[in-house]
Length: 460
Image 1 (spheres, rainbow, N blue to C red):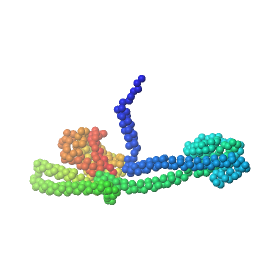
Image 2 (cartoon, rainbow, N blue to C red):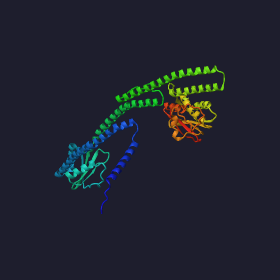
Image 3 (cartoon, rainbow, N blue to C red):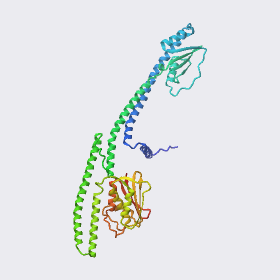
Image 4 (cartoon, rainbow, N blue to C red):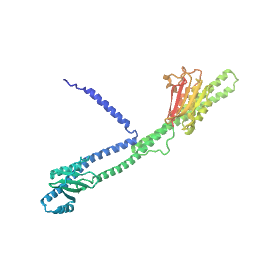
């Protein structure tokens, strides 16, 4: 009969699979925060070191000291037994008892014609019981009974003699290393002090990292950096904070330069458009003149959209904003004949936002819907710490493979939407830009009404 030898490759694959499962299990249960992980890095080696120290040193200390104390105690009892046998003339063993009590610190009693109690099971921690039993067997070699269990400070030892039983009560400190708890107390006390100092020190080191994360999150949401933020902590954390401050300043300078340049271009172009309007006003009314005026108005609207897209929401302060009020204003100002329904729930919805920029983003989504649909539903609410505004319509919608492309500036999806509707191709781009300035985004999907569903989500 031949034994089947497992394939080494299959064994290796099983071990790798098991290792991966154990790693995944440990990763799921490990704390995610830097502070908790750093505490584990500090505490785990200290606990492991103390455990090894306790097991190796303390166990040997207990065993060695206990064995020596037990050997000395049993030797004293053996001497008392020899004296008892050598001097039978000692009446009632009073001299023996006095000698044991005064010189050896043992309480001795001779019980003639007595028997040993029944043998009981050994205790769980039987170091003293085992050591005493071994020494009595080795030095005395007579039947015995011992009691080392209990809270008493005495150990009861009974030796069976020829016609009597010798009762010996010895102090526990004479037979057992009972001062080891002092070492444990010192070790635990020192460990607690060191851990407290380490936790406080680590907390101070983690705090600058948390402050840096808060500042980065505020910048990502378009909010001002906390005024008291400055480089603190260790050298590496200070370098990271300084790099963040320089990056923030470069971004602000870039936005400011872009805004200033576009403001100048806008001013110059508005001047030219104003001249066009004045010159057109001097001509007689005609259909061609109305078409030229419409083109000028369209050029001015396009210019305003370009400047708004390039400027974004920079410069506007964050204020507590009533979302219901914004949606009502957007509905009243919407261009079109669509039926617009608004739902914000019963509870008031007030969140910190750049009010005018956010209103423009919502207005762009609503105007995009009313341009191509008959019915539009707008809803707002909180979800997982974010403000969610949904705009749904029953229009022709947008193909799934084009939903990311429509956010590109100047991109027009004329196949899916009405070609007669005038648009600069910047409405959705401006809306997404404003959402991202607030730290959020806009996603498109199929509407429950059969058209397009736009979801604007920003953290609050």
